[in-house]
Image 1: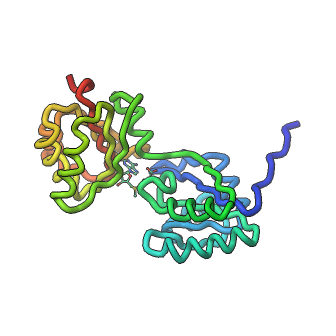
Image 2: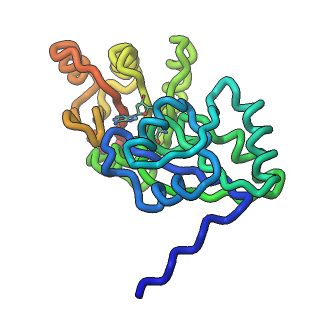
Image 3: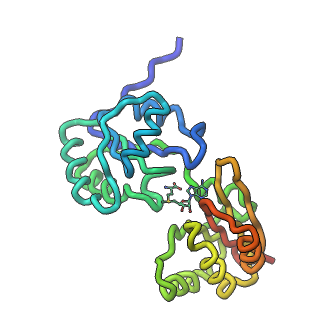
Length: 235
Ligand code: SAM
């Protein structure tokens, strides 16, 4: 007979990764954590409500997003103090990676509470591992600032980095980004990982100027991870 799984630990903050586009990517442990916790802190309670419903889970939800992080972190700490088991999820992927989470994790650790990661989908890992670019050394930038000058400065400062650079970008700014890469990294091998884990998943490869032409000709939409090969990968 299989051993029963250990119950969740009281007064613990669980960081639960959720699918980035394919519901089959939820892990068994994520489902059990969501079922057994006392409350789910969610970036978007409506969206997480739909996810829970899909898996037949009914749970009280607490909203936790970028602009109420400070206030909600206090509430989460109070709940942890009462011994509650709290699952934190974002709209997609791993909490804390270009998503809310960092602040409450630090606050919980500072107060001596347990924090456990329930790992799973993460767009940057999915994109990097299947990109064909070197995986040994990489630098994750997340989203660049919106202002042109700041974006260019941040990219230019990374020119000497030998490993793979990884960025998140919204579909509305992908052309702008490729224009910037054309100036700053004209010879580099770039991969656009689009719609990962979804029906129209694809990897587009080329120099920035080649990719810009492709994007324009097909008016591609959807979510993108942008990977820039280091000097060696582009030779
Ligand atoms: N926490 C998430 C993670 O673990 O990857 C990232 C959240 S961030 C707000 C959203 C960005 O991640 C998107 O703009 C896109 O750059 C990237 N992303 C998320 N899902 C993706 C997917 N299915 N395909 C490609 N990129 C994706």
